[in-house]
Image (cartoon, rainbow, N blue to C red; front, side, top):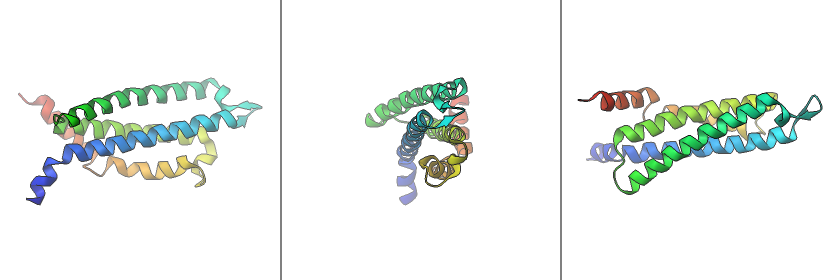
Length: 151
C-alpha cells in the first residue's frame, strides 16, 4: 500500500518542490536587487548599468509568470484537480527557472556570488538538487510528453 500512497501524492510533492523553488528564486532576486543598488562599479551603482537593469527585468518577469502558474496549480490542488502532468510541468519548469535565476544572480554579484557569506552562494549550491528529487526533470518531460501526445 505504501507505493500506492506514494503515487497518489506525487502531484502534491511536485507542487511543493515547485513552490520551494519559486520562493528561493524570488528570494535570490530580492537579495540581488538590494546588492546591485548598493554595490558600486566605475563610480556608480551596479543597478545603474543597462545590462543589470535588463537582467533584473527579465528575471522579475519570468518569476511573475511562474508565480501565476504555481498559483493556478495551487487552485487545482485545493479543488483536488491537480493532475500528474500539470504538477510535473510545474516542478520541471520552476526548478529549471530557479537554477537559471540564481545563476544570473550569482553573475550579478560577481566574485561575491561565490562567497559563502552571501545568500546567493548558498542558494546556488542548494538549488541544483531541485531538478533531481521528486523525479528528475527529464522524467517530468516524459510524463508531460505522454499526456500531450496521448490520443
